[in-house]
Length: 78
Image (cartoon, rainbow, N blue to C red; front, side):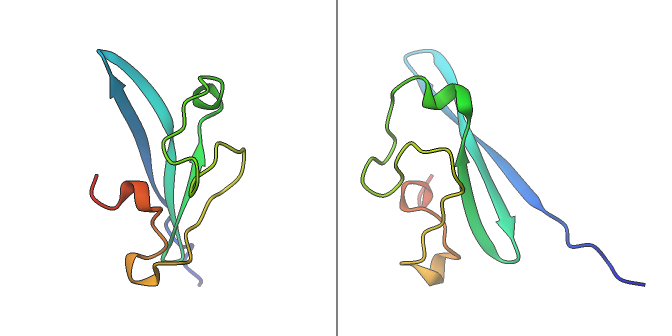
């Protein structure tokens, strides 16, 4: 009998001047952290990290910091 891997997810929320925005979702896939923007957030024309995490509809991964399990830099100390 094989076990399915558990997928861990975390919703990223941003609070700005009393307004709450769902930015996207972080997901742990086999020990690597991926980030995907929420479609509604991308329509807001806000950038949380324009150089390292462009507002694009795709799964982002940061391979430059393997010691942080590919967690995008904008989330390191959040």
